[in-house]
Image 1 (cartoon, rainbow, N blue to C red):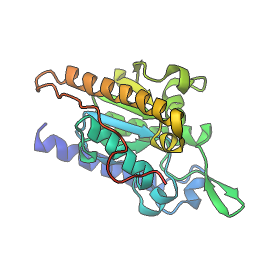
Image 2: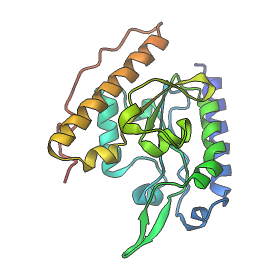
Image 3: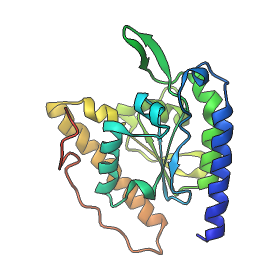
Length: 227
């Protein structure tokens, strides 16, 4: 990738971020602190798409920070990728909230919110043109594959994403963090299978580069991120 092309993509993403920041198509646009457009390598082979910003992401203006972000970085590291090597975005750019007993709480984006934000996501995919798309969680999967998509039954299968880009679905890091005991072990095994599939597909599509050998690691080794 030439420096000129990288600079062109960076400018295009900056312009897209400015348009997204000015958007008030949904009520959550007026409630959020920051527009969380996305971040990462504009020339990335892998683009990850989650559902939407949470409280910490809304405060910092960055996707996938906090405990879920820590686990995501471990997941990427398990297949030889750093956070800086990929591009990370969400189906919606503003934090979806509902009123709870103690104030605003996170919720999944509704279909109208995802539809209003979809042009921004489509533009990101068009600019970056990743080799592989990885959807994290059911809302992100449904945004690509329709409302009937069942993540527990259908994850781990290669699908046809936007622009004919190979698309795989796996569980959201926040979902993994909520599991305990045997369920945690089972979910970690499924996520590892998905990650290996992503690594293999990237290597296949990037045939001119040496194939990276993925090493199975404990996604929770080192300082614990589970309280």
